[in-house]
Image (tube, rainbow, N blue to C red; front, side):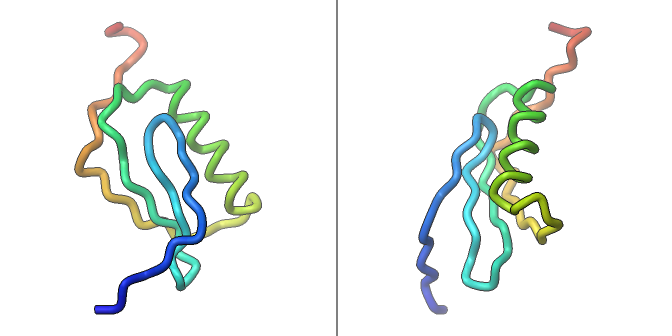
Length: 73
């Protein structure tokens, strides 16, 4: 299997993002509490790095924690 070269990483509070050699946006989640505010910031980052265009996203959510609802905080 050929090892890919990653040119640039993009960090958010919830995940690390990068584009693979085929142009697919990849993400690896972080083990941090997920809130609505953090999710909105992450979506804003995705729109920014994708040029506000639709892209294919492959995401590893293995390390992801549960979403914290505002009414249970």
